[in-house]
Image 1 (tube, rainbow, N blue to C red):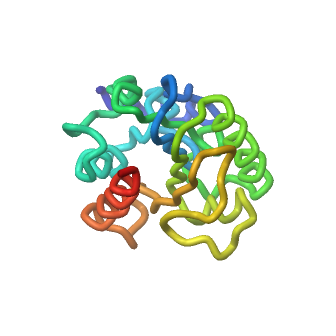
Image 2 (image 1 turned 90 degrees about the horizontal axis):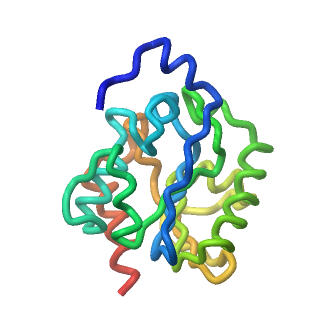
Image 3 (image 1 turned 30 degrees about the horizontal axis):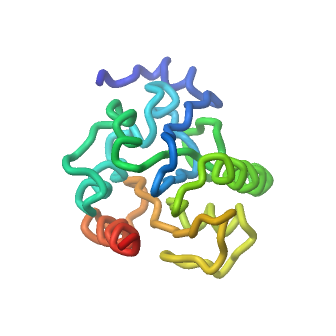
Amino acid sequence: MPRPTRAELDAAKNRTIPDVIGVDPTVLFCGINPSLYSGATGHHFARPGNRFWPALWRSGFTPRLLRPEEQGLLPGFGLGVTNLVRRATARADELTDDELKAGGQRLREVVAACAPLVVAVVGVTAYRAAFATPKAVIGAQPELFESARVWVLPNPSGLNAHYQLDSLAAEFRALRESLG
């Protein structure tokens, strides 16, 4: 996949990318919002340095490391991907609490429509803001969205220095193993 130019990245501001959700997903992963890189390419978690795809593979959700442009393969593994906020930004901290709360409502509607077993939000800070749960921690949450269990995972962005790839993959693996 060719790297977007600076002009293409600038043009991607506020662009949206489609959800990737098949029929009856087991896990629906929910990012915070697309990066400009994702907005420019049309692929979720596309920015180099984002560890979503390596964590997905290392945790056993996929049989090999997928590239962002292979996101269409996710439904075949019982997986889907969406975002809390649809618009692309350079940084997640450009989003307002109101946008995150509206995104939380949108996520509940998406979950109601596709009925995953688990919805996994990647980014505890965004989860706390979107769902007014300031004390939420990484892992299984006590609430349900419709009939879906809720799980919070660390943000896979390369900017999240608290989680290196091995510990990030371990959190993804804990979710996978909880499925039985």
